[in-house]
Amino acid sequence: MDIAVEKVCEFILRARALDVKEGLSDPDSGSNPIDDGARDVLVDGTDDATEEELREMVAGLNDDERAELVAILFVGRGDMEPEEFPDAVRLAREREAAGSRPADYLLGIPNVGDLLDEGLAALGLSCDV
Image 1 (cartoon, rainbow, N blue to C red):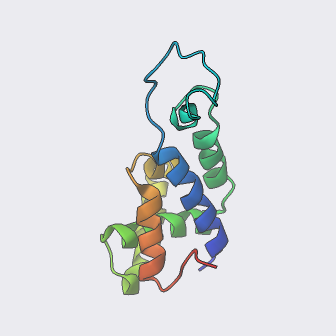
Image 2 (image 1 turned 30 degrees about the vertical axis):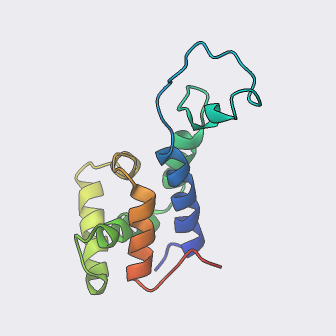
């Protein structure tokens, strides 16, 4: 693979941080983080950079790395088998050539971090140290 496992793991970590965000439940909170148990860190707010960081991360990948990241998702989601990884990469390239934006595609999938992690595992790779 051209994409470093560490890059995939960083994406997984950030995607999981985004997945746990929820909508604003107490818009007039005004309390300090200690008083409310720091629950506001789980609220998706306008000043939260997590999604933008993920988009920048995908934009910073070269063509091969972007295709492989999406291909890992295909394997993790069960769309393709690990031995079909080269075909999954080709499919990811075709989708991008047809106008699919990888960042939008990846961030539009619930639990994308978990699916990428499952894809790595199916390919015999892991984020574990």
